[in-house]
Image 1: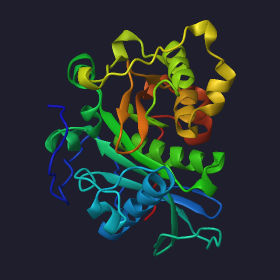
Image 2: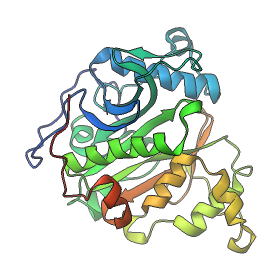
Image 3: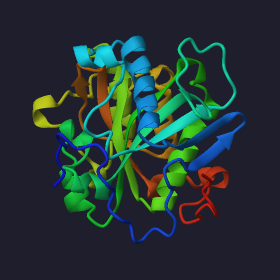
Length: 303
């Protein structure tokens, strides 16, 4: 069953994956670039470092609405954190420009992603994305032979929102996908703001140019559905629309991602969300020369 998970106990175990020849362990390094490293979190304290970064970006910078407990703890957390893997980008050289550095043993956390594999989600109530989009027809009916990975809670400190850092995040996700032999990535891509008319250019551009073909199409839940086609195609300034899209969404589109049918307003996080669907089979082969082909597993994943 694909449904929103509720009250998931921290520390729930992952289901064994017998098809995977080598799995990344907690703390596994999945990529490096200069003084930056991308790896999986090592234990609860590093998951809390990820949650602290999310609070800084989502609440301090982007004006998400925090309840009293969230404000007091300065951590963005929910019941899914206990069953997910948490990808961290670590700056291993001290950066004095970071006002409130979030330190771990080997540096400062400057980026994070939350990763939830399908077999883990199904043992614990489902995917977070199912709270906004009706993904069950895709996951359970049309594509039951494929293995899905949900990407979520992505954020990067503002000074590090550069192409090299985004590529390092992608390298980490891609090595994770390859090691687990996953077939499809999905998750919510967020546009800042909750007024769809103010986002008409971006939403219409995505609808006209990247709407998923029928076999991959997923609709927003009926009670949350927001129309994305807010402007006719010939009225869309595509260059301006692309320029103003968030870098993470642009990155997904370059790789070959589709978007679902309909957007969803998330008032808590002050965003308008679209569903991103990225089958591995859709990724352009030109990226494989830089990051590795799907079946070309890394020889070793370091600790």
